[in-house]
Image 1 (cartoon, rainbow, N blue to C red):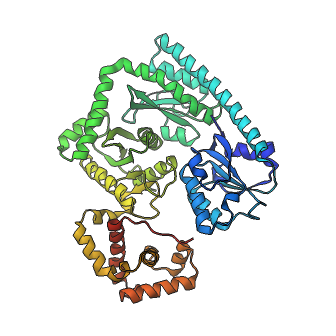
Image 2 (image 1 turned 90 degrees about the horizontal axis):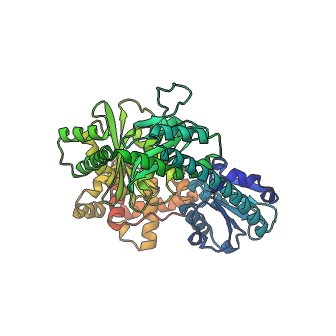
Amino acid sequence: MSIVLADVLRNPVFLRTKPDLAVGEDQLGRRIRWVHSTDVFEAASLLRGDELLLTTGIGLAGADAQRRRRYVRGLAEIGLGALALELGWVFAELPPDMVDEAAERGLPLIALRQLVPFVEITESVNSAIVDSSIVGLRFADALSQALSDALAHGATAEVLLARLGELVRAPAMLIGPDGAPLCWTGDGTGGADAPPSSAELLDGGGCGATVSVDGVPFATLVVGKPGAQSRDVVRDALDRACPAFALQLLSDRAGLATRLHASRQLLHRLAAADASPGALRALAGAVGLPVEGSDYLVALVDGGQPRGPALLREVAARLGARHAVTALDEQAVLLVAVPTGSVSAPPLDDRVADLLAGLLPRTEQPRAAVGPVATDLAGAAASLRQARAALRAGGVVPGTGPVAVASRLTAERMLLDRPTAELDQLVAEHLGGLVALPPPRREELLATLESYLDTARSKAATARRLRLHRQTLYQRLRRIEQVLGRDLDDPRIATGLALAVRAWRIRSNVPVTRDP
């Protein structure tokens, strides 16, 4: 169990520090499951995520801007809940580079302006977390017991769901493996005959959990904004409710096995790209997916994310989309289908990417990928193939983040399909003199060239991105032109240079070195 950042900021002892939230006004609902204090620079290796870290900054004494940025970046990548820096020991104010990095990584950053012993803060806030945990555990026990009792008396899924809705005081629904509602309680707007929208329930402050049957994620349990307890308490308690629904679903073993098998076969056929349109339509129909009048898209999460299937099901639930999820070649793979024309802005692939990014830790390297939108089932095979290509390409493109989107990595995907000899020839033709320089200077100029081309040859934007003084940037650009013997502002030259830089990164697998 946990509390949220807003609870910490209201804590009486924490308020004595005169906290100043420099980054994170939009993340007051961020989960804080424990408070930890350390001045060790390698603090990220000591944490598991969702902590509030208290530090005096002594471990950063003498560190330059680049090293401070690396400190913040490391904490953000392990999913730290918030960082609180006590001023007065090393820093009179928060270093601007730390503020910038925290904002870029979405890590709440707090300045503590009044000295309060960290032991008092940890005791007070951690006590509040423990109290919250006790309340949550009691609620989860009561919820689990009530559903178990109902199941023992022969309750159907509808009866279980109604009991769940009563206990959390919110509308609830059980979504099948294809994204269609299996049963639901009234939402107060459409009457008992009209199912609520899972997307509306979740966007309105609700939460969900995955129901696994025989170890295989099968259904999704969704409740609206709870009235009985806080959202965090209900979210954690839902995990205790899922076994009752799993046992009830097992009563239809034959139908369950058929749908799971059809879901696996459909995605395996798409991966192999060897199925006829008729076979795909038959499998989609068995799963419950529409076979016409829909747009299709594939998203995947790599095997390093153990909750991959659950994350993908949550994405589908937030879309309110019919879907199929299965494990494929050590990846969790999602196929979604939405009615044609139902998604306008943002486009479907961007929307799926945004939802996934909100569920994954912020990282430099992608852990998930989204393929392009297809207009028929056969095109979904290409969406899967291009999602996998995007995951590979994202590993060599700076700033990709946790989700690689195929439509944003078109050039990289095309280059990855070319023979290495062609890539080497492209690099030699356009960048020969530049890549022949010694590594530190080579990387510095390549990073400058890449940023300059990516910003449509805007010197102001390039200077901001690389955090350079204008004069330093101008000197680098002149040096690049001297080495290459090319006019960087000639659009006919710029396209070839941009492709060549990407080809060199793919061949060398070297990320961009960013200036502090």
